Image (cartoon, rainbow, N blue to C red; front, side, top):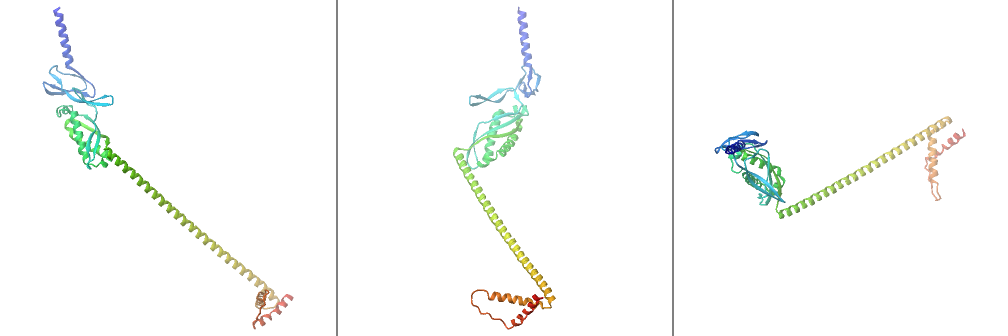
Length: 324
């Protein structure tokens, strides 16, 4: 009976020793092994063997966020597991002062990854707490160099500067800071009210500028329309005068041609009767003039010049012309 008890104790001790000496590490995780209090090795993912009771994983602190209703509680947990994946730290809002002395609440997100587990364990005592404090102080320094308007409009610039500062500072801790994001920037209530009034005034100013630009364009278009209308009227008047002048000139030409044709025919007819054509035409014109002078009911005195007697002598030739 005693031999069975001893055998059972030996089996249990063997199981305990084997289980203590065999370590299975999941992917993307690791453990730092100390041998008799000194650094020995970093376990790789998979099956690993250590010396029981001589080799021991190093205990570190990790940051855990627990949700209780609407509250988020941050706890520091002691563990031997080192997570090599990218981690996100959502820091609580903190108050920072801008260069123009405006107190603002800012909430930042930090994305980082452990690249050297040995440095992360031995170069810093509490890595999560150190990263949080470094982020807060760096954020205060960066925001303190900017005014409120620059802080609200330059998030990308602030993120880049913070990422560069934190990456340089945490490099000796075996940590790579991939990026920093400003989640919320909340100015005081009085500043928000003033900013809303400023935005409203800016909108009103832009509306007035747009109205003025519209009126300006309207006046320009109206004046251009009036100018085009006057040009068209002048052009139409010009064309009308040109056409009227051309018509009068054409009428004069036609009258002259008709008169020339009449004279030619009269001349031909006179030439057949051996009469002077010039005397004939002059006598006809003189008779027409006398007719106009003696027309009407008023009593008129008509004076016939002396030279008209010679012209009237041509009436005989007219008589002979019609006789022929």
